[in-house]
Every structure is written in C-alpha cells, then in structure tokens.
Length: 306
Image (cartoon, rainbow, N blue to C red; front, side):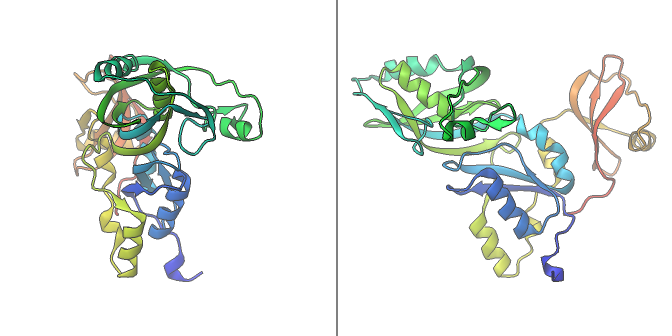
C-alpha cells in the first residue's frame, strides 16, 4: 500500500448529499475512502431510493453520531395515490391498485392532520428493524411471514406542498425512528385509495438546518484537481449547537479529563450537555443531576484537527 492510500486519523463532520441507488453504508464507505479516514459513522440511514443530507462523522466526531441519530429531521416527499406496494415505496412490487376518489384540499388536510403529533406507526415489513438479530427485510425477501411491531413516533409537520394528478408533494418534519414510507402508506389508506412513496429527499437534520451539502461526485472531482478535502469538514462542535453548553475553568477541565468527580454549582439538571474547555474545544458530553454532579457520557481527545 502506498503512503497516499493509507487510512489516517481525521476528525470532523461531512454533510454528504447522498445519491439515489446507494445504501447509507455504501455512501459512507465511499466517503471514508475518499477522505482515507480510519474511522467513520453516519447518523441515520436513508433508503437507497432516498437522497439528501447524510451527516458523516469522522474520527472523534463519531462519538456524537448517536446524539445526531436522534435529532429532528425534515424531508421533501412525493407519493402516488391509488397504488400500494410491498415496500411502501417505488422499489416494491405492486400489491393493489384502487381508483383515486375526487379529493378536495380539505379532505387531504384532514387525513394529514390525523398523522401529525404523537402517533402509533407500523414500520414497513421491508425495513432494517431487527427481530432475533435478523433485519426484517431479509426475512421478507425470503418469503417469511413478517409481523412488524407498532411503535410510537413523533411527526412535527406533515403538509401538502403541491398536487399534480395522483401525485402529492409533501413536507415532513419528524423525530428519529419515523418511517416516511409508512406515512405515505397510511395517508393513502386514510384517503381510501392506498399510496406509496415515489421520491424522498432529506433536507436537514438538527442542528444542520441550512446544510451546505457535498455530493460524492463533487468530492471525487475536487480530489482529482488536487484540492484538500479536509477543508470541507465541519468541526465536531458544529454538531453540538443544540446542546446546553458549559464552560469549564482550567481546574474543572483537568478534573473532567482525568475522570475525576466534578460538580457545577447552580447548574440545571440535564441528560445531555457539552462541557467546553478554556481553549474553546469540547471536553466531554455530560449529564448533570439535580445536585449539580457531573457524569461523563463521552470524553473527547484534548487536541483535534481536520
């Protein structure tokens, strides 16, 4: 292996614009190889059909991937009324077609309203949810009968943007664990004709509400020009903007870095916060109890570079 092919220690967050046709893990591996990063992880899967924001964490930033995984997300979605599929999207086989009734905006809005808020949702049978350690989609592809457990999810926004014939363009904002495919399917059932998802694009993930995304093609072109890809990475702390922030003095920082007991007087109890050192860099993700005692969730290396 030549020196230029060796994988290296880099840290930061890449806001990748995932192309259609790739799984999230395939997109992750392509990006990891372009950056020659030793360690990488993504922050929430997108189906191969879907495009849009897939934050990829390198190095130290992988320690906050789980936090970003649970963040609020927004999508532009398109669904076709009158056709139901095995996968609840355009990649599945058609299982039923029905005539689409005359629908006014008020009827569509009433159906959308019933799918907002805290709702119970049945994920698609073709999903990555595991039962007995096996993803449901593998069981479904083998022809096994799959019983999908329902779950509570949070849908913050589900709105009609545009209608063209039997195609609906929708805006969705939801919490982690929500399947937009299931929302499209359930909307179709509420409208009495069935539906499936035909296109999905993730527009943002908190705290990246206005993301400057980079495509794999752009990264490849930049690399071929000899450009430095590391300049496209955001610092780890950019993913912590929505967290409560605690500034540590020199003694507090030293205690935290050495895993010693620490209390912060007057601190409000929180399950997730970030402690920053005097130099401005993140020291650790922490939890604080009612007495102000600090518990380290994940510690960060003292020095980070992109």
